[in-house]
Image (cartoon, rainbow, N blue to C red):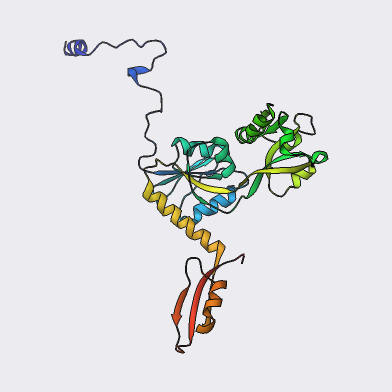
Length: 296
């Protein structure tokens, strides 16, 4: 009797509408707060800047372990999560606010056209995004290719480059996107010219192409979302990376010199911001410490 009475007091089960989730729960992840407690930083999972990007994570003091074939790693000593993503996606994720910080190429940022802050240039992955044409047409001007067929992995940058040329000539350049092996397009008869990255020029020359003009210089950059809530952690990471850049670009030199020769010496060793001067026992002499570019 008691069991039947208890069963009568239970609410009747509600029939689920076809195609609707149980209990009215949403299956969307749109409202998930994925970055409230941890800064998210994205680095290329492979490619030409992958290995050096990992060096910068190490330089920033991020202690993490990445499981095999897993593209997310939790940093142990800071509230940071590292995401290993295709380099071509990183700028978009940062611009959209899904990721706070990222390392990618300036060419990718330009192609995505996103609103992201360039925190610093990292000095590696340097190359050029150029208009490449068959060597037989090396004497032509870029304007000659207005209205022609262009193949590239950077269609937005290419369109921006050709827009004023098209306007001046009254022609319409055809821009076709391909994801790779761009340099083969001319030999296959798919393109009159290509817009592609040039580092050493070896691949370009092997394909019978030459560099007609440079559209932009590019290198790896550290970018951030301007609306990130993790400004303190971002600043700490940026400061550490800046220190690492100084350590690989500069060398500290120390020397003693007569005060009478100091003005001329400081023209050669001005230091990064200013040299350090210390008096010596001989008042006519001074000790100098200065940071000097290794390339000097």
